[in-house]
Image (cartoon, rainbow, N blue to C red; front, side, top):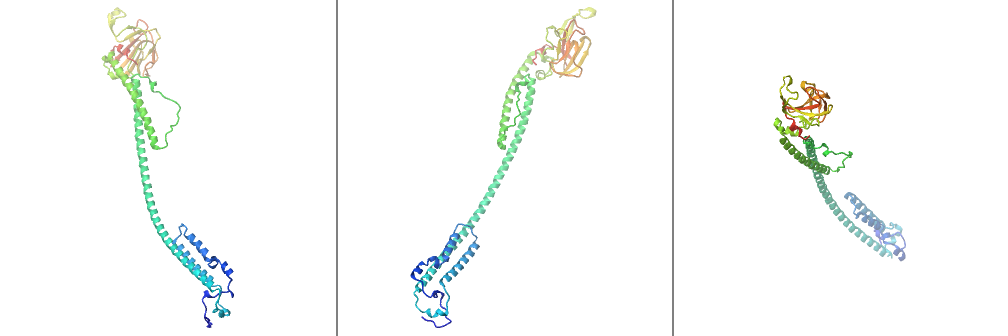
Length: 407
């Protein structure tokens, strides 16, 4: 059909720039990408959009609108190879051998547009699903975060409780160790009281820092194990002390010392009670009534009360204190000659008479076995000897039972 109206503008899809149609070979060389130059770009964009990447919904919407607009422009430009001119208006109604090719291109573009629309619809559906998934993941993340916070709070509370328990345990261990120290000190004193050697529990060695575990609980358990070892050792020591104590009490009862009016526990366990002999020598005169060594001259009685025991020793023999105490007299004292008197406490005192020399002073503290004088023949004496006397509350008692007491 020929249109003579100059104002008539034919459809863009029926107007072609070339005056002559392309040859079949040229038409065949037109690839799909050349006919629809946006297809490759759109496909690539779709592939990128479908990738599992978190993209904000508003950005996706902007991209889609831009792609749709660009695609429409590209399709329109592709279908319009040239503008309508009056010079070729007369040729519009003439049959053109290329018209089927252009119709085929339009159909292909329409099909491509339909496919693109379907792809866009699928993409929109995917985006909506991704939005829903993202929302669900967000809520799940918040729930998991809350659960994690609760778990952390519970762990912190448990750790604080554990620390408090360890501190309480350490306090109890420290109190137990103090009690063990007290019992060990008491046991050491009792060992001395019952005559056990002080070196039985001696120990030593280089001071090497203890390699305690770093964990407070393990360190506390290590301290408990060591405390248990100390307690076991104390059990053994206390058993030995008990055995010795019973033996000493039995010896005191058999010795006859109790007849002097001294408490059994004092005699058995006091370190100051006189024990043993002041010198090693034969006894020449015992305790009690004896004949007067000077006869009845000068009006003296033929017999007299001897208040101690005489030990015959050479002059200058060291005289030993039989118990610890404080010196009360150290010098000349009438018939005793040069005398030393030691106060042992509990009303007990010892006398050492007829010395040739005194080696201590009044008020001086002496220990058992310490040399306090040298034997002699001073005072009322017939020869070199040591007069040994024990008094309880001021009254002379027989020293013989005390001589048998073990140190």
